[in-house]
Image (cartoon, rainbow, N blue to C red; front, top):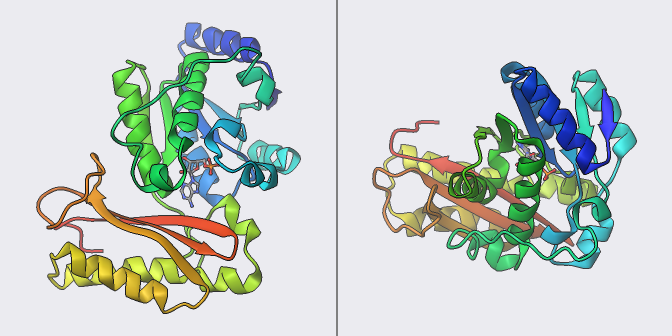
Length: 286
Ligand code: AMP
């Protein structure tokens, strides 16, 4: 495995791989890798000849400087894990390498980016869309792998891939959870033991909605109230939002019809803000 820091080197290597007709898979991450990231790597290994994992804590997608500063970083540990998983390349550019002097070009995806995470974290998706565009443009992967954990991000990336005409197929992998149900996240490292224990309530809340759906509940306000009630039963939880939206357009819906519905939540435990979601549709029975 080789760690690449420079963009021109990454681009020329990807060009060479394409000339050799290799199928290239890209797994974009911010490092501090856990089982969630590794599930994407496994999926990439299955589909691709060459797997590149990018590790870049992208300052443009953090709207709070403090959050960026304290984001967990562990390139040595990450590299050891990725060697074990037989990843071919890590692309780990510096901030300067991506946002060089005079950098002025940002990618803004309309409509999908103002709600949910976009409302709570202004500018977040501009940062995400910009860096993903730079990564796609540098590497031109055949496949890129993203987690359902960041459901809105998936919708934004799919949109930009189509709109900008990237020849990259977006593969979405399911949410990987701890035994307690807590969705794995690099941010879980910031939780105290008590908060970590309490945070399992998020999944229990989402499960309430799934169970109610299975029992025939179709009223979105009621489903949302069930999730809220459950999460609020945990004193350490402070809900930022609970939203029931169309999975593709992210528009709020008031009745479960034929479309696939996303219940997305953001909840704070102490200083840590966690997101999670569940897909529900009429046909799903789990
Ligand atoms: P991050 O390093 O947080 O930017 O995440 C990198 C990728 O891993 C994103 O596509 C995330 O959606 C995905 N990811 C993070 N946590 C999980 C998880 N628990 N299950 C599945 N994918 C995840």
